[in-house]
Image (cartoon, rainbow, N blue to C red; front, side, top):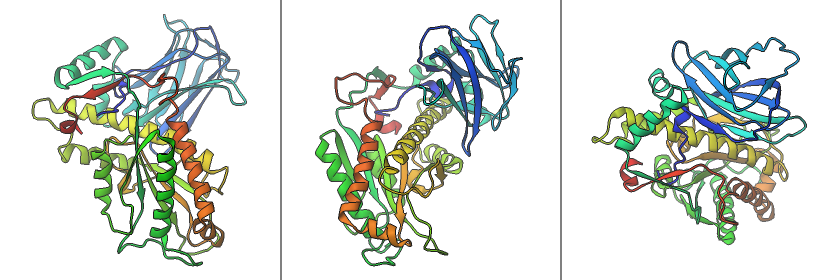
Length: 407
């Protein structure tokens, strides 16, 4: 839990913005495999907080310091969402103006975002992800009830609240395959997938080390086989801040598919991570209630999912400058190396071994370096809050005195 950022698992999430009275001009929804995204557009930035309520009916509340409803297509301030969100309404007469959104299933609030205009207005982004009924009940309540959860955690978790120093971001690079597992075979000359992955991983290691900002850990730095779960354990034991697994794709039917793809964990992987965390005993402490352990797991998964998805977006943007993208959208999968409960992680398919042009690029030292420079740029951007003038944009992080027993 060394760098485990607290937002109370979604019970109460603050979204920083301005304090000016602003018109809400649009609301839209994106239904994804593991979560539903709500985008609230406004003329000026908003101060907002998002939380879930279980009684008398399940709902999400997004409360604003000041806001007015001015959505032309919904003049009655009532509409229908999608995915996890049912009917919603805007209540401008409450002490704090608020959106009240019905939930179609138990859900938790993921880490929210406030985004500057990009061809439109200011955006307040709230993601809600499926969770169990038990966890939903634990994490739901009005903001003044959050102190009860904080007190419960404080009674059973030995943590002190300090700002993260970010003196050395710990990045684990995982070159996929190796040893007796060569991965996709070479079809157009050069090495097999395992060779390409390792060559790219070593370049990325050198680029990150050269910056002086990172502590780099390799799951392998030679042609050897490393078990999938051992790769996960390496990241956990290093208390990594980020894990990136490098691979090269292959198509069984055609040589036409080409380009890079970025994957984060899907709902099945999230469930696997949750089960492994509890059953494996790493998060279980006989001296604290099981509910507390489960809350800690949900908080950690919440942080992992949001950070992995944010990095995926950044990586796609950077890679797209130098390489064709096979899938220029959020992709999710049930890859074993992504199923730790705490370390943000992505799997990066760098291109297709079965495509002549991709294979040429993957086997070119110059092109590999160019691609890994784009990965480095994405990592630099994702951890831009570390270093520099010492300021830090992240929320407070608990540093556990007994982290090894809680990981």
